Length: 252
Ligand SMILES: Nc1ncnc2c1ncn2[C@@H]1O[C@H](COP(=O)(O)OP(=O)(O)OP(=O)(O)O)[C@@H](O)[C@H]1O
Image (cartoon, rainbow, N blue to C red; front, side):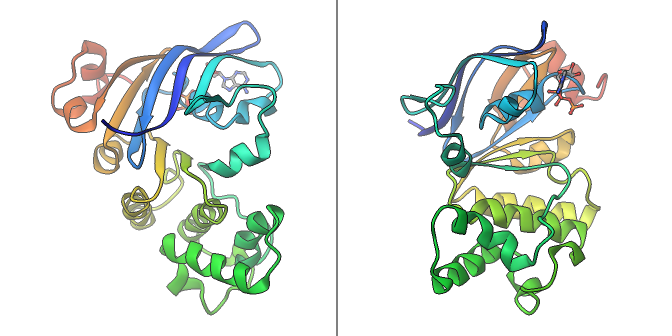
């Protein structure tokens, strides 16, 4: 049996009176990549943001249902949201490095979580940049501004920053959509490498990308999950007409 990293149970999200995510239950396997696909506005990002309580920051967003890590429901008001976001990291569509050096971008999180030793921080910075396939490109300029990196390098830096606090799960919201094809390919290679150590849930509009990087795919439509399956099955033999229409480009 596959280990489960995270489960959504009857999860619904409303913005005011308007439902954006409707009663979704999904299990996410450990150390796998799960892709969330579907047309614009179908609730993928809203669902993703619920998984580490980022929707808490949106006024008027109301969340019901459970997000379970083991027996722990992260929607419980007693949950320490800072430590939750350390365990479940997030990488956004546009790279958003801090206006600081490359080193400080990575060291910020571990330092915030109490690591003070320079030697330990140096080790974490190197290890995180290596895991994000960025060490060779940055080792001679660690104390230069992160903003001088290319867009693709900045996105790998953001991935390194999320790795630095040792998460179990990394959420990615269209992490390559603002990047050129070469940078996109690097991010995809990196995702394949990262899944050895982390469970990854990625929103993507790019069907080829979903097919390349993920082991499971969930197809969202109008706030619901229409189909959830192994990616190879989903793309070769979808069970629902709507899935077939979407992946063959008939809408969305
Ligand atoms: N902050 C918000 N306030 C109000 N409504 C929102 C907010 N964010 C999203 N919505 C609405 O919720 C629905 C789902 O949006 P969401 O962004 O989750 O979809 P999506 O599938 O990720 O879309 P896209 O692929 O275009 O990013 C949409 O109708 C959207 O207009």
